[in-house]
Amino acid sequence: MRRVYFDNNATTPVLPEVLQAMQPYFSEHFGNASSIHHHGQETRAAVERARESVASLLGCRSSEIVLTSGGTEGDNLAIFGLVRTGDHVITSTIEHHAVLNSCKRLQESSCEVSYIQVDGRGLVDPDDVRRALRPNTKLITIMMANNETGVIQPVEEIGKIAAEADVYFHTDAVQAAGKIPINVKSMQCDVLSISGHKMHAPQGVGALYVRKGTLLQALFYGGSHERSRRAGTENVPGIVGLGKAAELAAEGFTNGSIEKMRALRDRLEKAVLAELGSAGVNGEGASRVSNTTNVFFDYIDGEALVIALDLKGLAVSTGAACSSGAIEPSHVLTAMGVTADRARASLRFSLGKQNTENEIDFALQLVPPTVARLRDLSPVYNRDTVSQ
Image 1 (spheres, rainbow, N blue to C red):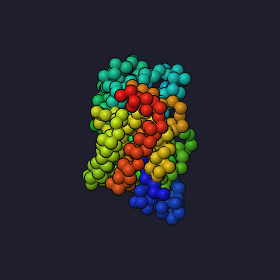
Image 2 (image 1 turned 90 degrees about the horizontal axis):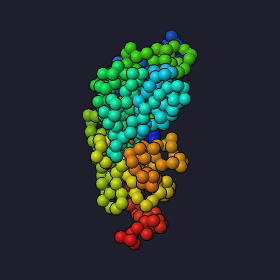
Image 3 (image 1 turned 90 degrees about the vertical axis):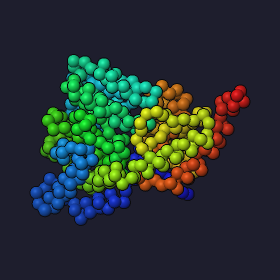
Image 4 (image 1 turned 120 degrees about the vertical axis):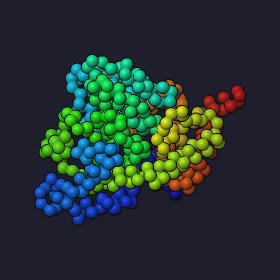
């Protein structure tokens, strides 16, 4: 059976160029990057080259990059590394659970958290962030691009608010890195987290930008790795892969690959909506990253549609992979004011660098008839159709 993968916001395949860069560091160049002999120093050099590539992607110094195991660790390090008992934190209702559950833990340890609502497009209003500031506000943490809808948040305006208030600003850029240009200086952020496996590097590696002079308390205690900000022997193959993926991501902003991805996404979105009624885009009207569309198909169950499409060879999702199997509808969509039924009837299509025009054709052959078949089985759809 042919298999097509449109769930790249959950994880991306490692690109051939990335795998090729990694392979020597599994066997030939195996040294511990903290060792002072030849074997250690050649892997140390590879780690530092990768660090420079990541720094170039984010517009910062290589010394400001802390290499991590991924986005969840980066978010946790940013939040727990900066916030202390009695501090106040501002976040939004549409954050990834790596941020939301960290904030929940803060509330259990005598910290205060304000949750900013979003509008129907899924956008945070910077003025709401400004109004939420308190004398004891320590940190603002607002994501750069949403993992379910792809909606891009006004992080530069929020960063300006944070700088004027002398408050730390963290942004979870896991779904933005490699899809839109990032410059930490223009954003005025203090900490920013990315994850390798969302940008065609392997799972289990990521990075946290930490602005020079930011006092960040470590979460792990051990050796003095990462300038004593993140103890633990470096995952050299993963880090090399992250560095190569960062280079490819940077090239994507000049070689037309981002525009190609957007064109594929737009074609899929427009064709599906043109063929099916009672459907639409969640987050319509807001700027979105180039690869993501979140479409609702009224009168169906989204998980049933995911399973039906998977049986025919197309992989999509109803939302965040870490929430799959959840009984409750998406917290992102409900925060946008989407009804529970519509949220449960929504699917996320997220493309990657490996996807092709031919694969869009394949999806368009499957999605409309599968939706139509599921609607035919829906008593609510048949009742409403007859009443019209």
